[in-house]
Length: 227
Image 1 (cartoon, rainbow, N blue to C red):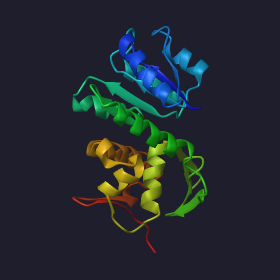
Image 2 (cartoon, rainbow, N blue to C red; image 1 turned 180 degrees about the vertical axis):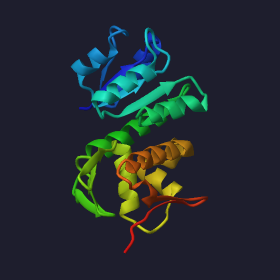
Image 3 (cartoon, rainbow, N blue to C red; image 1 turned 60 degrees about the horizontal axis):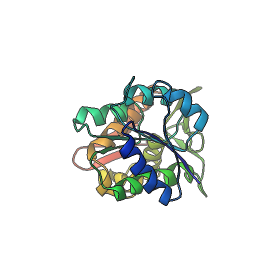
């Protein structure tokens, strides 16, 4: 049974979401003290976190940043705030998805299931090491090593890179990436993919490899590798 931590200060909404998630056989934990969210997170050790932005004491961005400094646990923002910068901020902080309230519960379940499948069944029956542009890409540890230096990627970033590397020197459409990453493109925005790719390229720049991920305007992305 997967453990989900629901960080939501609206007691009525929390109870409603919890009851629905329990029906899907998830073990759901709340927060007793909103000034101690991270401390409670470390005790629960959830498999996935669902968090609101507007919370007492500190906002969800604060707690997402703190959690991400110590853990790669999947994080979904669930918020009534609809400004594009809120979604961009959540992605930049390392969140895996953003759902705007009010929402349809089936959408929430679909996103939770897709993320859990991707994260916890990620390496099943797959090759874990790959060589690309002289770098060693370790799918299992989410690391890339090149010329003695290493960087660490998030699950999303590595998943995107893997899709591009497996089809190197070929254009992978944005639609194909979205579908493979989130299972169903109806449940994710195009802007979220852009944020994730830009974050991936920025990390690759630390190894001097960022320019090998090319943007093909109006088509998609391509991982280049010279013969």
